[in-house]
Image 1 (tube, protein in one colour):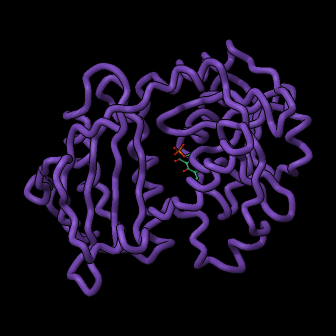
Image 2: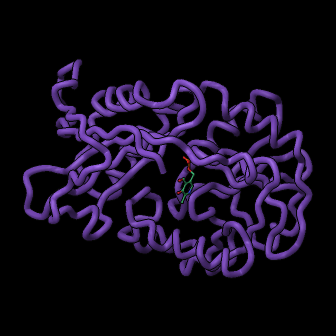
Length: 295
Ligand code: PLP
């Protein structure tokens, strides 16, 4: 990743009434060390994050990402992020993003240094990878057992399954396992046989004229890209919905996509070795929409 910009943030309390948070930002060199060795984000992955896609300098769906950051903070007992402060930090990072092409802005809120006075927070801006190939040629996926059943989020909320935490070691291990099995990506399934999400994306399936995604029941992240695409499809008069999707339904899908903020819509061309037709035109229309300025 080519880092272009980094900003440390002194997190404001939720009730802070300032309207300008510039004095809480410190621009740092993204190539030099900036965190204490006692940081709990690096020691334990104890923190949360968001990755926002940037297109031609415009950060996409900022409010949806700030909402999810707040949701993750709530689940992790972190202090509530001050929405306006983060909005201004995103705007600063967007101003440093390339005026043309695609980028990614990351928001990170860590529990901070052990016994320290406050959480640590920062924002980065970087150039995005070229995702033309997965968007156009599609990806092969394998299903991987996530190791918990669909009741686990209610039974064990400390697993933080609906929070976007910094602990992505499991997600990265799943991607490596998918590659070992000759695929490009994975779809996690619950141990009682329901479709969940991909390690870094949401799953959307098409059954005839209906687009379906797994119920955001606390076991998965509620993807901002899926939300936005469903709004778009609904506005076009298409039928969309959430449901518990049995793994056996994957083989019955007429089409499938993994969708996320930076790679956008990647059509699935095979699941567990069984080919799936790729609708090139529909996928291109999804990505045209996802690349248009979205607030
Ligand atoms: N699920 C997981 C586990 C993810 O990591 C991501 C994105 O990083 C998503 C879903 C999709 O979320 P979004 O569309 O907001 O990028």
